[in-house]
Image 1 (tube, one colour):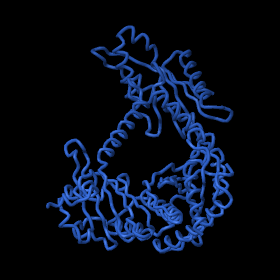
Image 2: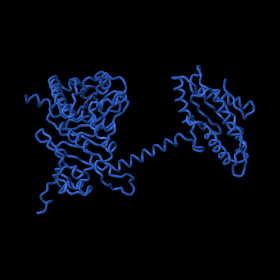
Image 3: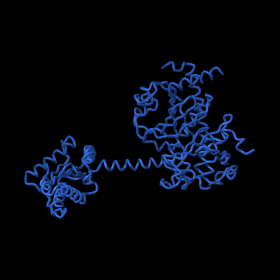
Image 4: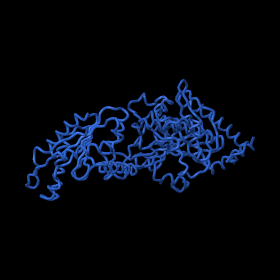
Length: 206
Length: 313
């Protein structure tokens, strides 16, 4: 498992993720007209059994979470989860100023806003990483994985069809706010192979 | 040479495909409009292309749609709209005008960036007709609600069944364990019910059970749970009620049942009931014990000659 990616590839992927998140932050700031702080992305290869624990460590969340999922695909495919503590899902919407507040006529539901925010965060980050890898992903619509579930419920080893996954985590916060939302990209074995090819191509082009 | 002989295969597919496809530039001008959009809106490509979409469809949510599009242009990523949050974008009719029961075609929309040299040139919007999905889902929700209702009710009397009663009792008991306060239950039993069945037949017996359930249901409070425990045995869950008050309710129920005979199929059937009551208190380990205590009190009421209520002390 450790050698799913070699050391050069890991370094390259970390660099790709760093660049991509910088780019994503710029785009999000422009779009949302707010400064959203993105953490340095963390890249890990995890076994399915360790995933929940790895995410608990990365996010620092031991309580129940709300999770919105979304699929993305090119030759590299996977799922992105936007995760936050279940009691702070409303605050997720505060990451963006409510665009509809000015318009009572165009009312929107909280659920729609949650999906919008999750989609924007996922879209920005995943697209930027893919761009660095020379790919244009196709996304599937966001869906609620659960409103109050444990990370163990999200990753039940006996029902999942993968053994190891590449996990990229980044978290968002607004200036002056303790609230954090986490974006986790997960890509399984097949996609790791494609990523490793893409990274090799990138390294050899330097 | 007609238009279709110069069209590429992709053009022909876009023209015929069973969902809406149109393309917008950053100023919200329509660049492309397929046949699905034309058929459902009644506006042909010649009428729509080259103009702002809001010129042709002033009723579209302007802020919302502009924002969706802008996010695709700025992020180079996708955006979505689901019928579950926003039933439709366009007021299109659907193919179930007779049996559907929804006003307009329910729509899932996808906003895709069309890229050229890493720049978003335009946004392609697809509109899928998911009316059928929405109807199936609504029917499923209605069926589930009905099943849930049936699962909680006793078939003969229409009041709560034992399973539901015990679930409510368990919840209330847990609440009482955590927050304290008062919680009482009553168990009651129609006296010599077997004799009624033997003398008048089972259909009269069933009518008596229904009538008694109805009478008692009429005098219990909204926050109480009244259920059939089995046979001719009933139970009443009384949250926030002391044993003393519960025994007042017990007398009320006994009078409701016993004062007027039941008139069934030309027979006047006199009915009385025995009632046992018990209240949660420290040292009662579980809700089952509470039922046992009420049952013991009921048994005592029977032994003391029936048609009376007895509290477990």
